[in-house]
Length: 105
View 1 (cartoon, helix red, strand yellow):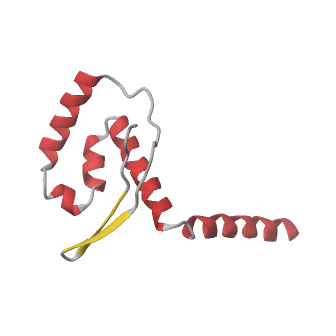
View 2 (view 1 turned 135 degrees about the vertical axis):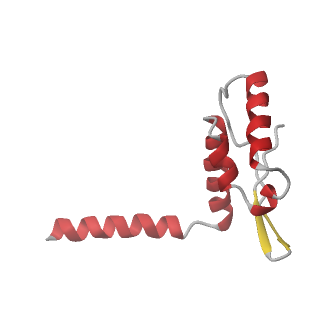
């Protein structure tokens, strides 16, 4: 019984920590997850998971073709490292943009 309680407590604490993450940390995690889709050439899923304002700027077929062409010119991703970030929120119409920026120094 004590093991069951300890297991439930561990799971609850783990999920609590995840849900308690700051908006900035959540934005960084979302950006990393999205970039991983692009890195493994899952361009269709990256488009599907993108924000509506992004989809309003480019259609899915153009996104897939453009990334495919760029990736073939650049070669595979060797590594990716977050250099800096800046969390911003801006209201755009009825939506909300949450973003992190990656800048190479």
